[in-house]
Length: 180
Image (spheres, rainbow, N blue to C red):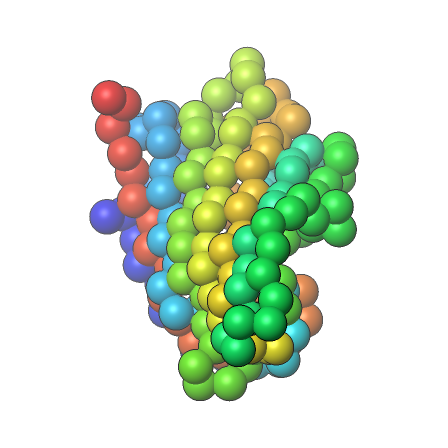
């Protein structure tokens, strides 16, 4: 465990190398972010991530893909499918991690994001995310994102936020993982 941050009506949760005891460099080849009971302030919220590549802005160029599996509480609907509205093609905007989050007490998101070799100045930086949540329309959702930051600069910061509103509550933990 490198760093744990707990949201309380937080606009963003940032992990920046060298700030507040955060290590996000060549110390570990793999970094793991765990999301625990992330709860939005706004109904139908979208939990996002973005990456900083040496500057002050979280705007690293990303290409990604997304798919979603869901099942409605009453059993009336279920599916697995590609979600074209949640992927990026050489985009610099925020990457969706979970969408249609409800803000009732029984609606939150938990999961993880792996970031591979963020300190590389030669190769792209891959990421994989998987989350589970109850959405704002009584669906149980699994959402999956995979992609890469298409930059040769090192990724030295990671920012989590809601597309609108705040992260009302929840915890994000950052771990470093040794190469196996």
